Image (cartoon, rainbow, N blue to C red; front, side, top):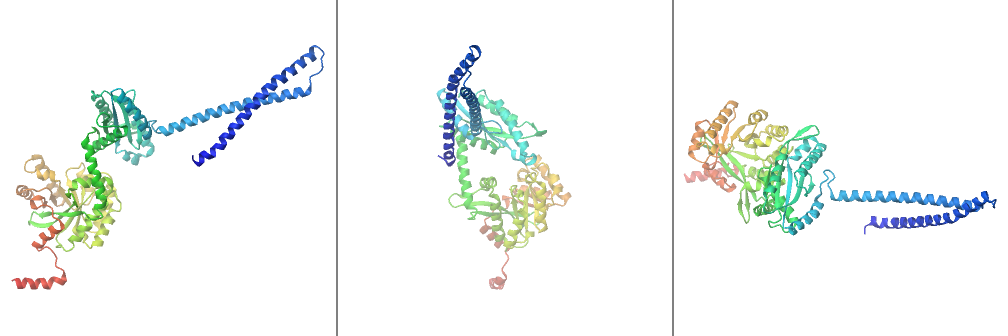
Length: 541
């Protein structure tokens, strides 16, 4: 028993005793009224009609007191009845608040588990299947950020109304928090198309505009679907399966639904293992830089390197960035990872030939950090790497979220001498606008166009157009994805300045790149060892 409950006990027991006393007094008053009233009435009638003795004053006073006690009891009875009604209403409201989402009136997470468990049992008893859908709105945070939480709440109510209208007559609907909803109902296991029609209706409706608070809002949803008769022994397992399927739908491009299958769970387990491993791998510097050569097509000389991240796992070997970079972005670890790669790269490149540059990719997530430029400059200062030998690559898609912040970050880096390249050019939607908005030093053609340059006429036309655009804007062009001599020759013929790709060799580790630079005499010799090196060369001659 809590302290509050203990404090309430004397109050309730005391009130109960008072109610008992009040009831006893009222009953006694009524009995006395019957006895006293009849005596007073009899005496009064005899006095007026039979010339009897006058009524005893004491009896009259007793009668009046009885009337007063009866009125008191009646008022107390009404007060108690009102108190019981208020208390019952309060308990009903408390129960409602404990089981329902106050914004939409849907079940909350706890109630979904409780009522879902009962529906799960009914499904087994009736030889039906229970389906659970998990729905998450795409980009809902943007609505809150742009229009405020009042508009966001109104949108959630509108979404809830659409979900309720799409459900069959007997269904569970719940809001689990934020912009995540769930709904469940029974269906014939032999007719899953019934479920798919409802899922398609929900996804289709969520992709249509909502008119809310005088605004026309555009959203979409990712929907996960799981059924109880497919290896789901409990309601908790069913909820988890639907949740996994929802994230699979979101990962597949959003604005769609996905049925749960076991491969999703295995993929999720692998992802969780990678996420947990990343948390220790970054500070241990298991994520290391690899260097892809960039070649000047005019002179065929090595111009610099693009830095790529590789995870040298102690037991699994080298892990591709395609596997761990998205996880680092989703979990917010990308900033720490990127700065670690920069620091390792700058330290490794301090004694390279001054003509060699380093290109570093910046994640779209990092461009949301107003202090990004200062963090990069701090690493440059601490490692002693010249800012004018660093080229920061920004993907076009990263500029859509906050162009003003990107302009501020780019401006700060440019002021320190860092060069800026627009990466994956041609894959965005506002390329020319971005070229005017930001002071880029270079354009990089996306490798998807370069790799198909000699087989696809459209790719060739896009490459030619980008190179012509670069020439007119006085922006040098780098082509990514050069994999053979024919592509290199084609690029050289149309005036492309620089190229990179596996045709020039696979990305090299720190040790590998030092070996390459030593062979090409592109490592600076420390001043203290220069005389000894010269003497060694004379002896060798």
